[in-house]
Image (cartoon, rainbow, N blue to C red; front, top):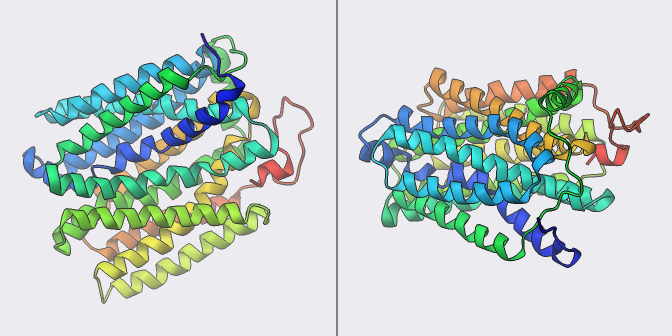
Length: 412
């Protein structure tokens, strides 16, 4: 198996950064098409929304599995196989007429994206150290936000020009193009494989889950991302059916959501040296205050501008919190790069999927005030978890076994 040469680390870094937003693309590119899919496939909005939930559940649960496998069998070949499988599943969805086939292919997409994204997160821990590693891990959620920014915008264009199937054709071509790039320049980044042992993997996962700040970080990541997914699942129906705009407007609003997340992530990188807990608390309290004002406002007045105010205030602060906690969790256990990346991604994805699906089904989000109530449940959960957790930001590890991060690293 060929390894990545020193001269190709930079080019492979760009490829890895380019693939990290794939999960966002797979979730968000067809959001503007949700109402049309329900119409064309002769099914209900809830049945179409289930395609989002199945993907993120599959994506989340799979990460719990693939992290250990990638530490044992490397990053390169599992990623190559997964990119081909993801591409094939995308084309299958585009030409499917059965919801059962679409559901099955969305589960396949979730698993293959998990392999690709966990592998690319692990790549950075494999090849970078110290300050350079901190720089890249703090960049992850900013890069990831490209998906929610670009994908719905493209999806709105695809929907109005060629219909809903073109979204999945795009995903198939996207994955296939990166597969060909990897054939030319890719290689194995892992220095030394760890022996495969289910007992060892479960023991490592158990150790990480029993670490209170790591688990709290995963929960907060899930809550923060559920805010974005909740909007993504409800917005097409609020914008197109209640406010009577075209699908491309849904795409523009989703683009605005992604920009808001990126603004929050960028701000967190600018404030990387500020006290960790204080900035988390400030952002969470700001969310709560903004939400109280917005719920009151939308009780009397609802239009597209009020919805976009919701989006900017809640999603930018959510992006700020998400970026800080993602970096914190990813480098909390550096000796288990693949397993930590898998557990973090899988854990928060499962939390996100469960919470967003429950809120959509139980609240029946038909207006912005109810959307605000859904946001409120998540915001209160974030603030409560931050307050109840003892964050490890001022301690150095007593030993490598404890794998505590350094003050500078933990505060990243």
